[in-house]
Image (cartoon, rainbow, N blue to C red; front, side):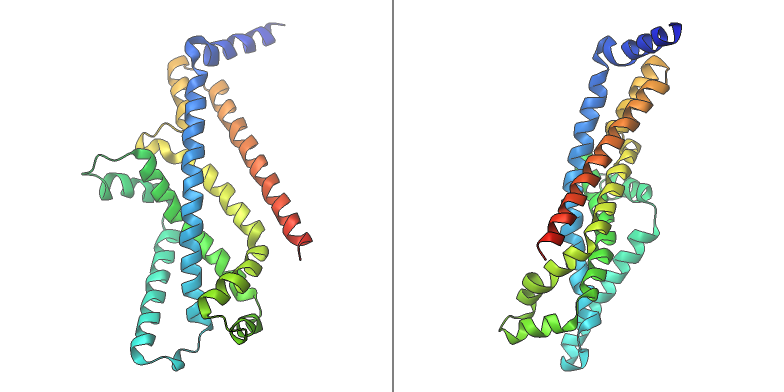
Amino acid sequence: MDFWLNIKDEFLRNFITGSRWEYLSDGLMVTLRVSFFAVLMGIALGVIIAIIRSTHDLSDLSRFNPLGRFFINLIDFLSKLYLNVIRGTPTVIQLLIMYYVIFASINIDKAFVAILAFGINSGAYVAEIVRSGIMSIDRGQMEAGRSLGFNYVRTMCYIVLPQAFKNVVPALGNEFIVLLKETSICGYIALQDLTRGAYIIRGITYSAFMPLIAAALIYLIMVLCLDYLMKRLERRLRRSE
């Protein structure tokens, strides 16, 4: 009986008194906003980089003039440099550099900085995932599209990418889940996300169990919901084949 009374008292002290639950609710909104826009940015950037890399790998460069070959090799080199730098350094370091170095002299919204940092980071991983999907498509699909009168861009958009997307949905879903959890480091730039909200409550009540467990459960619920949606999308795409 005493145990449940203590749990009740801890719950009231951590969440009800002073409306401290609002730290979690406000932080959750920040986490969702940062994750959503970072995912969109990561997809857009990743698809562009994937197309650049796969075009370089699949094209017969001897067909191009020297200037064309130089341009294709240059953008491929820059894409590889981007992938190596982003995937080779910790996300938290990238976030700190973005806020304390690149935007150090600018009064800028911290959420925007977080979206930019996580979007650029996610784009590197999405690029390799999408590129693997493009490379898995038979090269005859590209030739078939060109024989129908499509140019390279239309063939890639209407024929190759839709098929590649079906193949990489599970990997993309995993990347989005990782991105959602990675946003928990936003507190390093004093952005009040979900994790930071739990930490603020802990600092007020000097009780770590309730706020941290609550934050963990919220993350777990979000991940399970995202995983469910990605599995439904995967099943629907399989039925449409």
